[in-house]
Length: 389
Image (cartoon, helix red, strand yellow):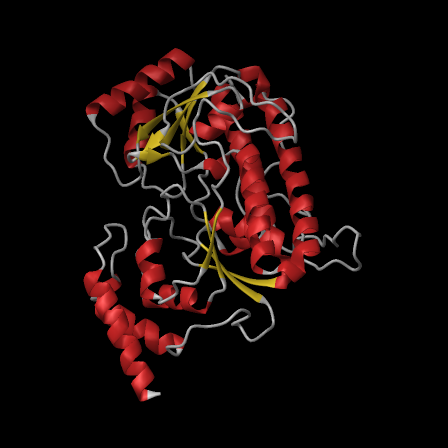
């Protein structure tokens, strides 16, 4: 065992020394990369783990952040042990690697990510975990990423021409916030389903049934949002950072943003651009986000004599955020806030979606009782906490 440990640590040390540094992975507390590798090796027993490495007979799946956890948990149900890599209160823009995070990957059978560069810290973590065999599901595969190419929510539906062709790039890469468009989220869920089936073929019937149940809920959400936002087609709304392009395109809206990514400071030109958008669209509200420090956004709203509400980018959440219903509830709240931003007053709003919290939204968590039957869909025990107004 001592020989194995020595070889393993040496391999990790050499791998870290030869690997290029990654700007998005910052060692916590000044941990050098080699010490991080030693901590990982000590945590994981220095041996590559086989399938069902939890010892519970279940597939071990690691997800990256909140919406990917929602989608994966909906498909996997109780058949897999689903663990989120990032803490609930830390988004992918602010993530700092911790020794235990690579330990999670070392014990995993499958890693599920959003893709499109949003989790660009993963390459180093996977390497440091010593898991070149780790199955990785990139949920962005097959999802239209050009904002001139809308996704279709229903099978066989033809994409419609987009009124907006801006914001395709995000830090020089395709904008990664595909999950905020329920139509594209449906495609992500399907990709996750297929990836889990490939990793665990004996669970195919369960994964298919659970995915079908959740996709049905996403389609219903999409239909509700479409009806709610139809009166505002062509209007512009303003968010703090550039995350709403796919959502806007999907519902025939336009979007402006103050900064590209949350950690940026706005330039004078950014502020003037937002002011023009607010005045041209007669907006009553700017849409901030709970994940960002948006003091400058609040100051701008004060100068324009308008309000600040929120559009949650779903990059973070509370303890309840791992439940599949969380995505549905937050998106319903986002639409209610957006309608108020477009409306002259809250009294003009008609037919808003169910406010957040949403209670009693079923989530596929139980295995099939018999082949060919629909999965049991018990109610979620906790509601997503928050305000819709």
